Length: 189
Image (cartoon, rainbow, N blue to C red; front, side):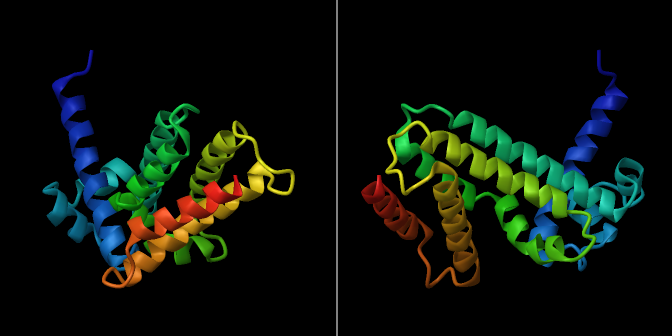
């Protein structure tokens, strides 16, 4: 049985994680301070290191939570019967999540040598490719189109569409771009 104190602590932790994810996506990891997170979450600044140890610990917790959300979304879309439409719809829904913007915002930091978030990025990309590959292996593919390579191309296209939309939302329609991707992949299948 969870005590009231444990429940309050968990609620505070969730508020901090949500605020940090939003701020890291908006301002970037380096520009976000504990004071920013405290103000956005409504939780005292001193509670943040108590829950997460350090700013890096907070970032890793935000990314871990994001990886869990991606895995949850991937698991929900497993059904072959749902078909390719569901796969593309899932990719479209993923583009609109605040955590997806966070992945783009933190990408440069993940690529730096010795980055503490590099491994989390690998997990996220692995989960996306694995879901896509598993679905593709259930449909008849031409021999020149291996499922693992096509999964890389589809995930890469989705990430690229998302990045372009974030950079120029007035010039890029992500749903129209995904429809074009759907048409191209459907033709190849």
